[in-house]
Length: 259
Image 1 (spheres, helix red, strand yellow):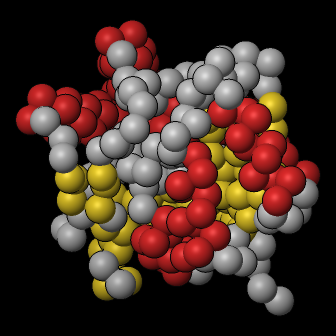
Image 2 (cartoon, rainbow, N blue to C red):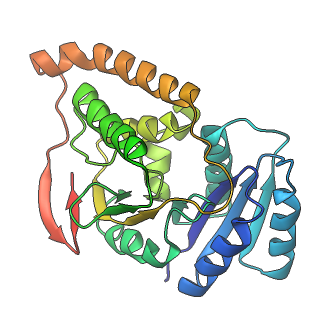
């Protein structure tokens, strides 16, 4: 029996990008369903999402009362997808930075693991059209989180990910309270400490053409503060070996590295 896949796309002021990303998804993977989670976008993105859903039986929309952050949107999307019985759930941005044509890489790798990360920083991954400052911020953030938390993953902050339904249940995503892009670090930390098998596959990340990035100094401060706190809390266990980390296993899996 074919596994059912749901791509969860949070939106806030993405009226120009949403129709494009939805069309590309339906063209590249016509058997995949889409759930748009809109936080009452003032630019009318929600109305566009409703129009897409009315015209395609594989497109669904979840309207929320207001902007509550990326983490809350994904938790709501996961709740909906699990209640509907999907076997695989995917995180994807609406702005075109994640290539729908590369989603098959994540889903292929998910046959053998619990969580798959679309990675910009693993061999074969790349970033297009980013200024140097943004590149340094992203790579530095991943490196800092990797060292502070002991995570053997190259791209810790990326948001193109695929989960088995069983993985979401076992890592208790409702306890992941971080908002903004710190949510991605928090989810990965929960997955790793839960002993789930994680793979990274290379992707091409492309800077958005339309609209404005949601990245802000507040988001960066939240991530740095939380990662530092988690790292300090876990330091005794790492020093004295009272917590047994998940072993790192490097394998040849169509360009993926499994941890």
